[in-house]
Structures are given as structure tokens and as C-alpha cells.
Image 1 (cartoon, one colour):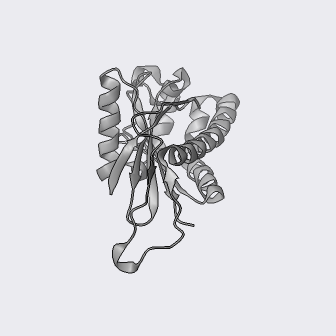
Image 2 (cartoon, one colour):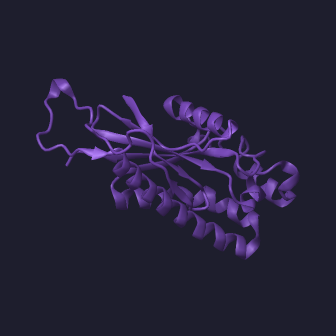
Length: 211
């Protein structure tokens, strides 16, 4: 597998800022399985196209999650949003993935749900994005080609809204009721202590590239 380039930046409020960098408009071919023969009609796509598709999927999933969380918070405050993340978030993201025929997941090095722990290349991407932020830069998505004829796009997620800190901020910023709900559902929670502008994790989107 190889990392292709970084193309644009993602903000979990739904703001996505496009940045062309280097040779971002160059065409690249998917790595194919050499021993098994390669499809004659495999598509060639640009980095830009890969990131645009991933960006739309991440935005779609974010919008679905935001709608559910906003309704829960309006009904009973942040404590009501905790069960939404526990029981509905996975299904909402899967609906987006199924509709777009892709694979889509959120990952982090500080998970609330241990199933979302980033490992290997995902963890390295998070480290790189966090380093970029720490140096005052804007972390931008990474595109990787794979031998299974797919493309993987990793999009950074930052904490950009004060509302996020009601469930992910320092313990002093989280209400006792919300803390109790978190600890009941997630006894091994590691997703506290964030500040505005911190890297929360990544969206990892796997896109098929062969027709």
C-alpha cells in the first residue's frame, strides 16, 4: 500500500475546506493483484475524486448523527445524547455506508467505545494529523491505494464546537449526570479531556475503485 497525498481538511461541524496540494490532480492507478490477473476495465480516478467521494460520505454520516444528537439534547440535555451514541450511531453510519456502497467508520486513539480504537495505519494517521495541528498547520486527508482494488481515505476530525465539550471536555466541564451516564455505559471511557481545536480522531472511508 502507498500513501498518495493530502488533499483537503475536515471539520466535524460539517465544514470541509478544499485545498489542492502538489500533484493532487494527477491520475493514479489502483494497485492490482498481479498474480491473479487484473480487470480490463478498472477505473482510474484522481485523488480529488477519491477525497470528494469520501468527503460527501463523511458529511452525510455527520449530518445523520448530528440530527439524532441535537434531538436528544433538546429533549433532555447532554445526558440524553449518551445512549444515542451507544445504540444508534453505528446503525446510522452503516446506513450511509450501505447507501453509498462503501465502508465507513470513525476511529480514535482515545475511544469511548473500545471498538473504535485506531490501530496500525489508522493510529499513525492520527499521530501525523495531531503533529500537524500542534505545529499550527491544517491536517488534510490521506489517500491510500490498496492491493484489494480499493482506496482508503482518512479524514481528520477536530473538536470545533463548544457543545462537544459537554460530553468530551475536561471532567470539570462535564455535568455529574453526564459523567455518570458515560461511566455506566462505557466503564473504560478514554474520551474526556479534549479542548476546542484538538484532534478527536478520523473518519476512515474505503472506496471501491473497480467497476
